[in-house]
Length: 502
Picture 1: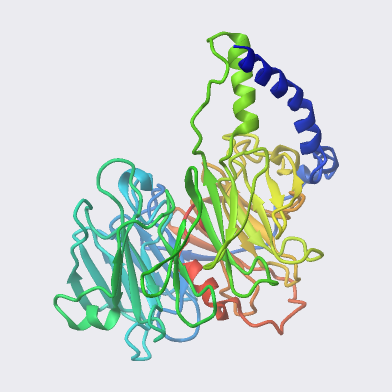
Picture 2: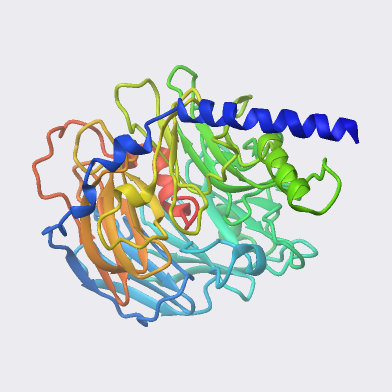
């Protein structure tokens, strides 16, 4: 009993010290509350509007991507909803549509399977080397479909059995595992019972899928440490021309395990970027949720014991962290008060600092409290979203948050929609929370990508049965940069995004 009382007193003494240490880091709320961004007027930028031949009902299933589907070097639009896939060219003309039971997530991924909320469930590339684009997707009848991008005609439909204990293959990613370009396919699925995690992987040569009745995988995995809400991502981390599979474990192009991070909970979000230019190759950013069991170091069930145990757990918990790692090693882990980071923006948010910054939204159901780390894992800013959001913005904060190259300057911004509603969208500075544009919308989905061709990015909003595309009308001050699509990891991420992993 004496030991418990000593621990309790020590923890009480630590409380003011911890508050002091937290208060010394980052930008203070008082600094930000004076910015008066809550009076921001609605933007007068008018969108390009594309009427969609789709049901207008809003739910969290299906999504949208852009890609060159018809081979004219312009970015086209692919939208999926349960039972539907539709393709429009960059001018808004419908190329083709299909009514079929496409594999998209109709609830939470951990209960209904992948690809996760807002995941489009489609992939686009020239997968057979014929100089024409193909579109690939899975159906819930266990079939993989490979269709011609220009007209939707079927090139191949093949039934693929998934591992024992699973329902079907649920997520697909075009990859380059053999150094032959976009000629391989990664399939992923979850366990059918219990809390569903995408632990099962299989890699295939697409030529085999096109030509053989019973193709054999290049390799398989049954213990991949996946994100809890999202499908796997791939990227060439070390620049050798072959893709790794990214999760809590890094899988080599040949299917071998390269690295496993020491998670205590599960992965909420995963990103890939060159966060540390001083380290060769690309890095992976992972946000962790939960993981620690509540510890009762002070016996009893009264006000004093409960208060002491709550403080002890707050001060000693080890989960809710941010990880930075590559294919070779864990570079750092960090946290801010062990608050759950949940969603992130990774980009050059402060060009005066080396490397990229990581903005974390925080978990709060209302009154979000974002915090920002630099490339070294040091806290550089934190603030209350209520102090910076425009007047009338929902108190639930922001969601579906993308890094965006909007201005043409080196500083990247963030784009997001109002949380848990078909509401407005905005562009803001993640370092201090200042909103720069607010667009009056009824956004069901938000997607960010370069479709105009000047390397800056546009906002693509799905609102009912309309696509609404917002472009920056100001002259681009830096026209000489190559398009973002020239970065393979950018191209990969724009086809595998979902609610948690823009």
